[in-house]
Length: 471
Image (cartoon, rainbow, N blue to C red; front, side, top):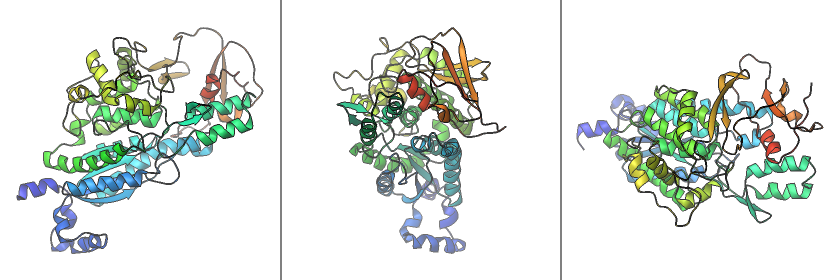
């Protein structure tokens, strides 16, 4: 190995592995398993949000093991560490939900600090929950070292009354139970069936939305967003991700080469085409900020207006995330968007391929109807819209995937309160054909937490009367 190649492979770790002055650092590293030959190798972080609190993260330790094997195979030395992850599905409706968005910043900060402090040369980031996905991506962009993001994968759907169910059905079940149309036993059976094992929520909620967006952005290996958590393809992608980071050291490819205005527009287009989560706006704006790319909420509206919905995925559609995998994955969505001319097909990803090349290599399962043709879309425009008005003068995000009437005119009843909405969901309800407006205010001048309204959505989905306001 020439001196130039050596320094290219170890742009930072020579700070702790070279010279007599670094003997104490090497002594510490020997204690964790490094030997003489290892000090000549690039040191690669394998950072995951593994924990035993949430199904989204339960299996990430196994994926980290395979990523480390890939690093070793490519000639690097892996060093694993973990960070936190908050489960919105568990904390929602409690004071714990205040920690959700803040956890994204803690994740990004902790990964950045660890890689910076230990002078590591590259990083494989692995996550499986709503805020841990963007947190890991933000860290990779900040560090601007060779990096690949790996999603932990979606949970398999549960089975209840001979149909597929997800956590969304449990929220709706609570509404049905409160309305008297579901018994205690039925709700218990649904609760016990909806989440059968490891993986993120099975619909196209924040985790699956962001996984698809990051793949479209190019910071994940093509095809890695959609395989379910239990799939053997997950382990294969973990191994390949470890190898890819070491290869990036050889080629000089960095996140700043990948995460650009053009690639972020591709990520937004995939969110719109799949009816993705409103949280994608929040997170992609944060990623753009880390990358130094100018992006505003109005850009989401512009891209949504030209992007057709081509994926029929829950919560706005019929299928769950595993069905997208069986159909052909994110590459199949990208293929339709390339054909429609609404994406930047020359943007490249972590494996060096352009979005056009990835789209051309898509494998479509014969007879699938999860992803439809761009010229016969489910809807001619995307699944999100940016709204402005007296309730939100700086703008707000609306999910319109399942909206049949985009214009609603008539009287409205307002439900402002210093009390959380979820404390008001069980009050005696009123009847009437009015628009219902909910918003949460806690009285504080600054509040960096995020409030979720899935419970209110569930009431609407069940066509239940909305609770009356409380004082």
